[in-house]
Image (tube, rainbow, N blue to C red):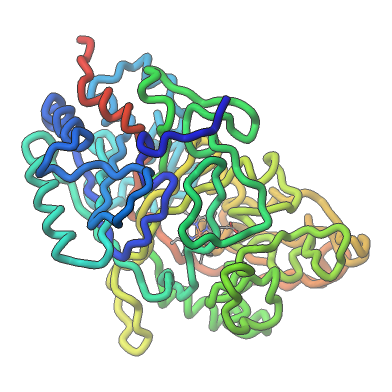
Amino acid sequence: MSTDIDYADVQGTILRGYRVDMARHFILSITDAAGARAFIGQMVSGAPGVPQITTAARWTEKPECFVNISFTAAGLAELGLTTAQLGKFDAAFQRGATADYSAETVGDIGESAPAKWIGGMDDGTRVHVVLNLWVEEEAEVLEKVTAKLRAAFAGCMRELSAHDARALPDNQVHFGYRDNISQPTVQGAPPRKHPIPDDQPVVATGEFLLGYPNQSGGITSVSPAELSKNSSYAAFRILEQDVAGFESFLATYAAEAKVDPEMLAAKVCGRWRNGNPLALQPTEPGTPLPMSQVNDFTYVNATDAAADDTLGLKCPIGSHLRRNNPRNAGVVGTDSAHHRIVRRAMPYGPAYDPAHPDTTPRGLIGYFINASLTNQFEFLTGQWNLASDFVKSAAAPSGSPAGNAYYNVSGQDAFLGVNDPSNPTGPNYSSFTLAGPGAKGTGNTTIAGFSRMITTRGGAYCFLPSITGLKYLSTLVPTT
Ligand code: HEM
């Protein structure tokens, strides 16, 4: 099957980074299904007055705003999809983000539990639509388009909440790291305007769009056909970051591990805060590497021992980077190309000022996009981020006395883990290993007992229909 993609049929955020500084996400509940179908139709009709859904088609002039829309399983049911049709959708999508199984799988427990989610997201049955608006950086445009959208959905959907995001300088996230460096290169997708080359395989289109072969050669489809090709799934997440807690973690545990706090910051992430990867820059942050180098690395090199990091001596196997994309390292669950994810999230809340500590909520909000919530978002979050036994036993090219990868990872992801300090024998006890050379982990330093630093404040499992799919939904005649 051809992987030529009709970009004009794909919602833009799936395949394109919009390179904007502001976003507003509306969480909506359908109150009038016929009106909601008409609203969807207007957004793909070219009708003047109603903001149109942005596609992945090339533009000659950058639009003043970008609009995309997604639906939960409850939302598709409201619009008229039958139980039999919904039964063919991704299993995680069907159960939704607030289901107990989903929450336990991805670590949304305790303070992160769906019952505590903000903005009406605690009740997944009421969350039907996530409507997204991005603008370059003009607040007036954000307000102008917001007013138009609100006028258009007012009679048919109730606004449960709206959530703003604002980019921080230099693409930073609230812990001070440079973000937006590594994204999968999707076969057939429009080339990035400012490409960041890497040494990783191009990922099959079907890992991000339904209707194309995926990494396993299978094609995911749903019924009806109109909703299948060029559609995608996403986990919408609101992740609150405890910046003061993170800085205090660095100070306390760097002293315990006898490393510089900046080194510990780099070790838990896999990149220094300036974006340089530990894989290439293992001992000091240095000056930011050129974009041509900053993502161009792998972890295993069987022919060059100096370039090899099988054991995680440079970049810990349990770092956020390696857990979320082990690249060419040996892991349980096929390989990393089967579990890539497109990240379209942006910081929210004011920058933290250590001179004036505050508790204003701040964090990261947006979509984590994939063709299978079960095999990508949930697998990644629930397995590689919440477990330490995902790495395959492997020695460095120099031989086993230098150690074995299996021993060099502990606990959960420092960012995405549950990291419960209260129960040292429990499965969620926080622990992080800085590997040193030596058989069976004898050269390792492990820090433990730190608190969770990122709390889930909201979420929804979403379906991003193609433009054909949106037109289908807009004219759907529900069976009674
Ligand atoms: C507040 C929450 C989060 C923070 C602060 C955070 C931070 C970061 C940072 C600083 C990077 C390095 C920049 C880059 O390589 O582009 C990164 C990379 C990455 N993160 Fe996160 N992240 C968060 C949530 C998540 C979630 C929820 C997922 C997946 C479900 C995820 C998956 C990834 C992936 C796949 C990479 C790129 C790894 C690679 O290709 O080498 N992150 N993250």
